[in-house]
Image 1 (tube, rainbow, N blue to C red):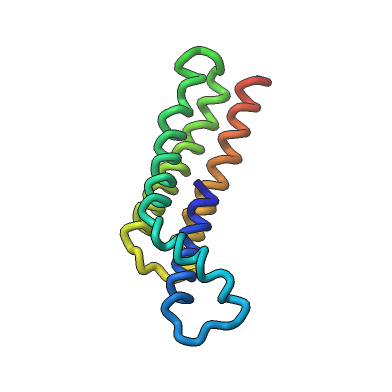
Image 2 (cartoon, one colour):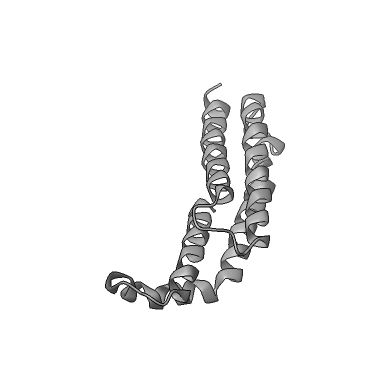
Length: 130
């Protein structure tokens, strides 16, 4: 999902590039791929949202199935909270299609996902070792 958020950030910049009259020579080769990304923006948004929802739904299974114990759950709760925040900010970014490249919403979404993934990894390590 984090890469999808980064791609969304690039799409907003690509839209601006496609609209601009003066296109630098180095950007001309990117225009074809940029227009493809812009065409598939809705699909990219849905894949990103779906990935986050799937992660939130599947993450408690090791605890619920008795595979991992309380140490896993103790770190999973803040990890899932961060992924839920990421989903909310990603949905906000998607609803504000005109978000500027470099927008703080993109940055926050990416940071929430990255931190949630690290906590999720630590939850698995704690669940296995403790």
